[in-house]
Length: 246
Length: 246
DNA sequence: GCCCCGTCAAGAGCACTGCTCACATTCGTG
DNA sequence: CACGAATGTGAGCAGTGCTCTTGACGGGGC
Image (cartoon, rainbow over all chains, first blue to last red; front, side, top):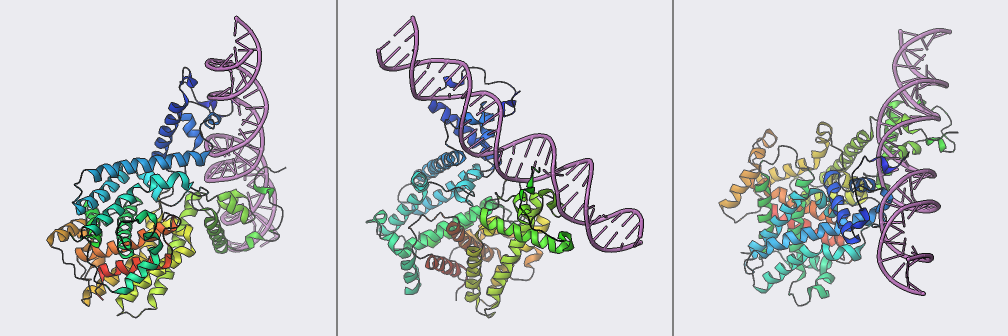
């Protein structure tokens, strides 16, 4: 009498291993995403995923090194899904409509986040305890949206559509200290973006992310905000005016 | 031969229950906070804190209904600790120095958050799976900082130190739709704060929270920001200028 | 055609978790 | 002082991640 996972009732009728490895990995990711959507990252259970796939938990280790590895797979999947969604929304706007591009990025982010709240929490929420994301696998897919932002900043700089900050040298000094080396890295090579602009752009981004996190993580209180779409739109507008003059 | 928690070696020599209930609850909270700081909320283990206290896990249920209840206790403790810290920082600034008060609130928040990262994540990070915070116990302590902000907005309105937004009626309409009923609630009774101002204030707050979450949850990338203090100060300044003219 | 070895799944087992319950002990109060 | 309420104990159930041994299968080399 089996004492482990074999308590599952039936199904998985024929030739599990007929499905080749790639398909199996795809199926695991799919099941993982289902469980993520239902229970969240911290409660993600390898055994449950295995049960879902009609196999015993230990068999899953043929495809996935451990729970952290599955988490990593889900993280890059989330980043990819998010990147695709935001890039698509952004791509529908003409290049010279900078304000429209900003709005498209922000609202695209929110639309995706509302559709995939747990995946949003996975990548932008509090880190999962005892899990370190391997940066060599996650940073590149996790930078795609930020890349759009930087391009937007560069285009705004080039076309002279940056918002005019009236403040003096104090803020510029602070900005230089904060992101000076970053703005002079090869990443910003020839973009014309200066530290002051980058900091403002990051502020706009933080404003949007903070708003979104507050909404998704339900810190708004129940009846404070009546129209969440209008609320987010207000925030996006304020953030846009921080960066762009148009 | 015991199979459960009794594998602890010794100690707890005399009269555990000599310490009265209140002291015991305090001790449980203390130990819970230690474990929270080490392992994070999602990994918080009742058995581990019981072990820490030199008793068997089941005994802990005399004081705490279940894991969620312990979590709730830790949440209100975190909110209280945060509220105390921020209120103290804010209290050191003269009432008429509105900009100073804003900075004190923001930097007070960050100082506390850096000192208690896991508690910050507990209250402002992604929600713990399968846990619903009982709002009747958490909202009141969780609103203290926001209360300071609202008072600041009211004072700025009263003394005419609000930043002058140049944008037209569109943004005002949006703001009205977003927080209209909130700004007319008894909470804002007689404060003079209008929807447009409230939205701007919430934007400033979201900007700060977004910045802080990004820093604490390590989404900044390793070598992007060189001077995190300067970075945060930049953000606080930008946020302040969103709201205040001074 | 056969055999050998790599791939894959199964299941047992270890250490941990939350939670419940029957039992024992002890304290404080009537 | 005695009794009842309060408190601590340990066993037990169901679940978790992960490891290890065992066994079934099947394709490539001879």
